[in-house]
Length: 80
Image (cartoon, rainbow, N blue to C red; front, side):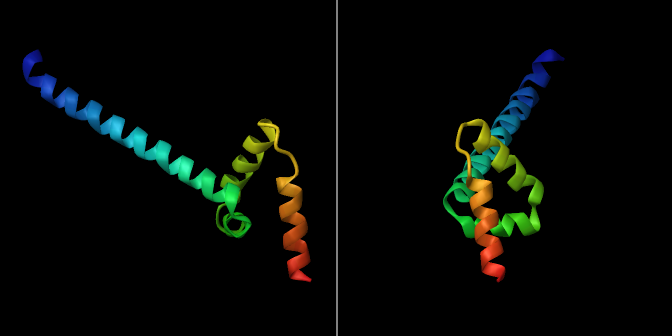
């Protein structure tokens, strides 16, 4: 019986591995896009503010300060 479950276990493992890799590359792409485009960050602030907050906190923890303040200042000036 254990022998018949081996192929199923391998398929499940491969599926989980592929899902993890897709998630990892997706997170990298999202971070890279937010890090290089202020317009994309503004779009994220309207649609998914909780994801933008994670971006701001992660950049602040890595020692890059001022991105949040610069965004807020720019967006405030563009409304006027």
